[in-house]
Length: 249
Image (tube, rainbow, N blue to C red):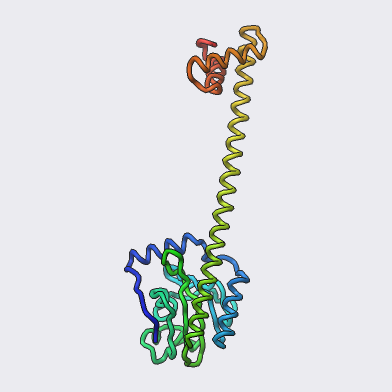
């Protein structure tokens, strides 16, 4: 059985969902204790051998956290009936007996060695309504899911979403700080280059006019004001004129 269902809007809806998955940049990241604890809590709450936190990619279901799966299993195919179907609706998705449920019967996890019989999932949903993946309870014995268990699953999915939002905010802060640092370094480099150019131009004016550094700088500044041109650009022209004869301030 299942709660109220809400289908995504075809390929355009899936494209928007995948854009959200890419935005959070969580796929193929290392294990994280906070997500592992969510999976462990799901397993204890439902008293099932397997619990997972998954992100649904274009053609695979990737496990951000897993409790009870064989070591080394980090993803499965995006076959319908379980996680791939759970992200198509807003509420909890429950399969009480997979061998008697047409939605899940053909799924390899049901027909394969795992022998899945019970499945419950709550979607991990962004603030703008995109379902990135699911928090899942998986059992090998048919059973019901109580309203309390469903509510717990939804709460844990919301906690996962909060963690993802906090991670995204931290990533954006780090990126912004890096961009600001790079911008400051670039500005400093440009300022140093400008200073070097101006100093060389002052030296040329001093040599040509046989004047002091202050007088040479005054000539440079006056020319900049009269021509409404940046001081550095005037200085660069003077340096160019040392190899290409032309009018000099």
